[in-house]
Amino acid sequence: MKAVQYREIGKGPEVVDIDEPHAGPGQVRLKVTAAGLCHSDWFVMDLPEDQYTYGLPLTLGHEGAGVVDELGEGVEGVEMGAAYAIYGPWGCGRCHACAQGAENYCPYAAEMGITPPGLGSPGAMAEYVIVDDPRHLAPLGDLDPVETVSLTDAGLTPYHAIVAAKEKLYPGATAVVIGVGGLGHVGVQILRAITQATVIAVDLGEDKLALAREVGAHHTVTSDEHAAERIKELTNGLGATAVFDFVGVQPTIDLARAVAGMDSFIHIVGIGGGILPAGFFSTPMGAAVRAPYWGTRSELIEVLDLARSGAVGVHVERYGFDGAVEAYGKLHKGEVRGRAVVVP
Image (tube, rainbow, N blue to C red):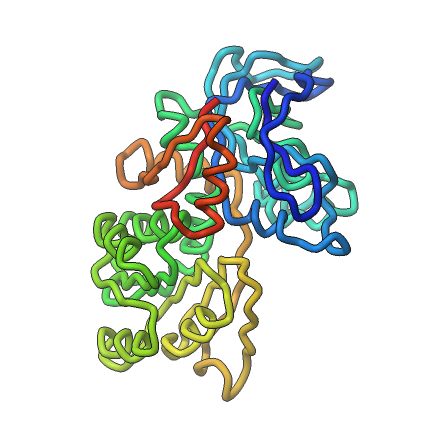
């Protein structure tokens, strides 16, 4: 079968032919209908050899959807031929966090060698993918897998970050979204769908700001030396009650700190490597800083329900396997508007 793999440190993705996998005991095989690209893939592929821990070759794709075509021994409750989305942050399934569906915060996964698809385990950017347990499947029903697959990360991750800040998103509050890329443009929609906060979107490019306005941002601000001043003006000098940084590089983190108001939440979602010093005389009084990771199983179901209602959607660029390397190149250069999806 065809697959998109990372095979050599520093070389980037390749389209290759590999053997088809088969479902073992307790596992489910999906015939892949869509697989999403993510900046996290490039974070992994850009790591130097002494920091790379994901194994080679690595089949990419931690955003996946497909139809069940093979069941391993003992699997129940999954329908052959039915469409599912894959919940990616796999945990041990037995600890306190996993019992709540919060496998994204499982404290034992790493030591047990449990890794997400595409981030250690073989991912969905292939003709077939193995899912380790049926609990990691969310029914898609009549949702279009290509239009929906990115919600397993680009929807779930901002949803988790926003829900965790819900107490700061009351009517009259202001939420700042920094970075209107794959996650940020969905984050704007989620804020509009589940809160009554005023949404200010910030990005470098006018095309991204135009997308932010298309999906519901009340205000857009160019990320330049005047951005903090402009946001303060829009918040009557008070600053934002919640800031969501979907980039995470040092300049955006510095901006997040500059525009956060007193008793606010600052959620650093992007993995750009920046650092935010927190404490007296560094962050505003009462401000809480958090680095949320992915989301829970129940939150994925909620995100898919938002998609069914029409409240949330993903701007998608489609590629076949032969265009996957080109798509990753565009993603690396910041030229993808919304999310790129590989369709087998």
